[in-house]
Length: 437
Image (cartoon, rainbow, N blue to C red; front, top):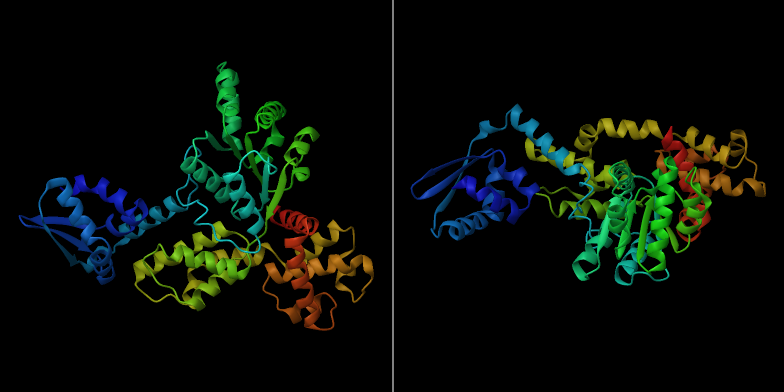
């Protein structure tokens, strides 16, 4: 009976929740009841509160009988095998969705909007509701893990739910693989029908198009066909169109025909909101101080931030201990060490200097000439945003007399990055060179 119920329960309570709460339980029965052995009181209370009625309803619908449900605690169940099993569950739900399927979590409703992504969110929703207009194509750019794929798939979800338009969403790599297969098997007509007879074409990670001239030709023709027929094109990239190397100018021009929007790393308040939204679906509670510590520790990648939260939740489930900033620091010590080592103040100074063709010593000096004001302020902003240095420490490093100078520069560049496309582009470009090393 239980084995037959498993697929039903997976669908009703969700695959992730089922694997967390039911994959490791033991099932037995008497003539009038089902007995579920669980590892601890936390499991017992959570299943009784949230899933007991669902299980009994499923039994009745499948077998037309009322059977009691009993939960029994077996404290010896948390062995090494179960711990390893949870690691596999964690990995399963942090991997990216298959390129042919949409991730059910990537909807507009689940997207946390903040100052760093308000414009991309608004334009993505506008495109989903009114395709083929002034935002065609829509080109979304930004660093890894900031939400580009989420917005792309949110558009696809919205369109498939609310219209009869045909939608194709695919990472560029899959587009290329299909193109190569079509050439080898003489299937170009079928390939063209798939990508040119659609209402919405969404191509993720278009920056990889630089590697293949024939693919550029084919995408150029596909783009023209769709655009001429007023079909909506949405493209994402980790950089601006003109920054993609070895791409034909005619493609760069078309990428910029409609609207280019960029997603900046989320600010602290947005990161906190993302974590709280994620926790709404999880079986543990984490206090505000710990959430804030986690949000302050991982600053520039939403995907990594969510992955870190899953690790913390796993700890809470298996150790049954309170989660505090101290325990988070211990759980995530490898990640936090990587972050600390990957972006240093000296590296930021070096890259900003190189971008503006200046000597690093000039940015560190007390000089205030007009030509170095903006580079210096960008330097102050990036060091504050991506390292652990305080305002006074940054002031000492960059020759500022008072920490209020750093605070002013930080606020100014943060606002400029939201209002001025050129400033945002400079920051993206500098951070991209840092992370590539």
